[in-house]
Image (cartoon, rainbow, N blue to C red):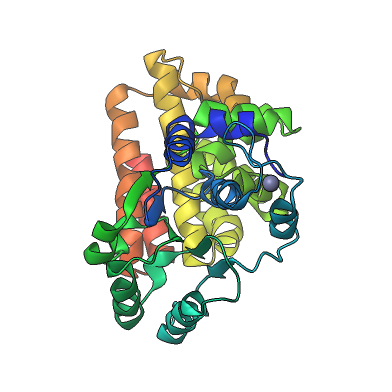
Length: 330
Ligand SMILES: [Zn+2]
């Protein structure tokens, strides 16, 4: 569903002010680089901005939604706008060549032309160089919008040709508030908002049965790991390893484990910070009583260490078994 102008302003006040300001003063850049994490509204605000640039009768720097141009855009049929996204792994040079060819074709459609390059960091060297040439000789009435979640992966020469617009991530309280308003339980919202800043991804996670199972398994392991190493090792084989089989899952599992110990440490320290597992508060209180800060800190370190070792392709079973032992030592 399309967001309202107020929602855009609340989500990205600085970005919106800047884009609307440039538009109203007729001081548009030839190329914009929208950078920021997933879920920060880059795509939605791109649609807003493109529509505004093309709208025939905008009202207070907001597209009217009713003119011919707005209608064409909303139906995906506006011929003055070109979108490019990676074809497979990369944005290929042929895609850039075709784009430039289309933009150079004169007389077909008058007025401003806009091209949007999604995941611009996925341009390989030859594509980036082809685009760079085009950016270096900006055409009148052509506006570029490049999108990226990985600013550092983008060629610096491309970056320097664009006006950088940074999107800040949605704050965790804001994200939680939204998720709960949309019907998610408070405890689930608290957990998923620790794992992603993207509203969309948060909703998908919460609906995923495997994720719900993962959450249960993590919490169970924290309880078992503290009291009985044999049981913990058994549980590892029977429940943990089958559930967190893929590398990404294993990483997420360790993150979730880390957040559990962080919760316990916060409880012990009497911090009012929002927990990752608010539904475990009573259990955390008991566990916090049984542990010293030194022990808790060692346990946090142990999980962190496992997390750091994970990408090095170690034997994952061994790594987790070692972690169980380290959690015991505490
Ligand atoms: Zn319009």
